[in-house]
Length: 283
Image (cartoon, rainbow, N blue to C red; front, top):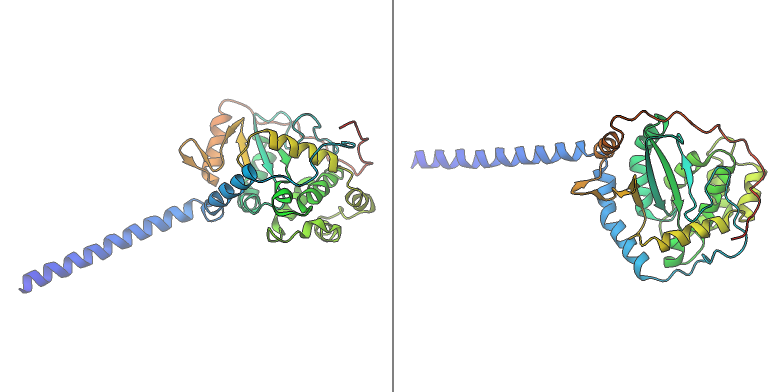
């Protein structure tokens, strides 16, 4: 009996040890996938946002009527975008996002440092396309107002830091705080040199609303599932690239693979000085 008891105790110990090893392996994987805590939770949320975007009407004013004034250095074509990084970077990340979208905030806040590293080193150029689907789904105008403010920050050469501040301070999805100019001015004060009379006038007057609406039209016509939509050289990488889950490590690996044998970009645009808004063009 004692031998059986001893064997039973060993078996129980071995099971506990095996469970501990499995727990440790899971914890190691959790720590290694830096984005997992922020991005894995995004996946279901992004799917929900995509489902809502696909099935709900858009009540926001995205008719494209009225003047379309592209912000300084931005593209005003069929798919308006704000470019960040070297113009001759060997790869392009295309990101469609909405400043009211929780999944977008979780994604951006998780990959921010990596994105800066990739753009600053000339590995990628990022093209930011701004959408307003949450305004249409939830009501309000915060998506449009924040996107216009970000475009105004682009006029001042401060799109990236203001873009980051907006996501770091994103209100809960039902709270349309970004519809209030005062909130956008408060956040602009966190970006040195941005909160100027020119910026405030640009925000208050909705200078780039037509341009944002045109971008949102392009999003709706693009048959995308939701925001964020992230493409590397035209191939979707969010939430997965093929069978691989997005993570910091995988994002760097995918860019390195895409850039193999290619030189980093060096043609960085000169920092824009604050200037008058672009002249409106027919929308």
